[in-house]
Amino acid sequence: MRLRRLPAVIAAAAALLGAPAAQAADYPNPGYVTGDVTAVHDPSMIRAADGSYLLYSTDQYLQVRRSTDRIHFTKIGSVFPDGAPWTAPFTDPANPGYLWAPDISFHNGRYYLYYAASTFGSRHSATFLATSPTGLPGSWTNQGIVVQTGTSDDYNAIDPNLLVDSAGRWWLSFGSWWTGIKLIRLDPATGLRSTTDTALRGIAQRTGTTTAEEAPYIVQHGGYYYLFVSWDLCCQGTKSTYRVMVGRSTSITGPYADRDGVPMTAGGGTQILASHGDVHGPGHVAVLHDTDADVLVYHYYYSDATPRTGKLGINLVGYDSAGWPYVH
Image (cartoon, rainbow, N blue to C red):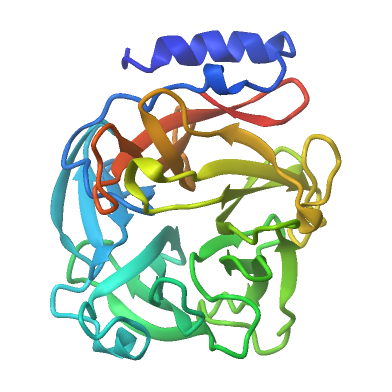
């Protein structure tokens, strides 16, 4: 039995009893992980054909880590060891290989990796697609730009996440700040943007004095689509205020609403994970449907962390008696 299983059993029992949403004091600490688990930002993970886990994260040409048990991780290289010059028009000339927010999945017999190129605070951004037969470093082929934005746009083409819905349609959610989270249709034959459905759909946006919302991830569970997003500030070390919010909808295109019925396009969101104790700014989540549970991967900062020393967080996701997700 893994060390995290006992809390999972306790949380599952609470869910069966219809326990209310967790309060800040109830947020779990990250599960036990070891090995190369620092300098991890914006992680996404998949279980490969051989049963091992491949974890991708923001870094120089996107870093890849491998684990056989979901606990011990070893860095095995970068997605693009020979560089990615096609991304240079969108990145910092002083650090051209620093790419963001990889999103990994497996379809049609190959691995798909959506990722972003940009600089902090800029809307001169692009989301790219690469594909691979193995998912391993150096095996990736650039398939081009999926969506891009410039200074005249009121949204930002970063933080992509692919979901194939129950009807087999491909969708990409993405976005950061400004007017929030967007959703576009993709062509399953290419993985690129659909040429027949070109609509840009807004599915979440902050209201009030801040537009700080990014990193969407959509999960289908039961009769709902769940939209996870991160609110507030990332990448500030222990001053980070990232927190994880969620809403749900019976349709992939929305409208998404929180537990109280507030639309996510009107600032709604139910908080399920936030800073607590020595854990600062948990966020930019991805969800892996594993054989034993839904697994939440994210980054956070601990104790004397600096802005570039985020740590890998792994917990499990459960659903309470009302169908709302919680972290355990």
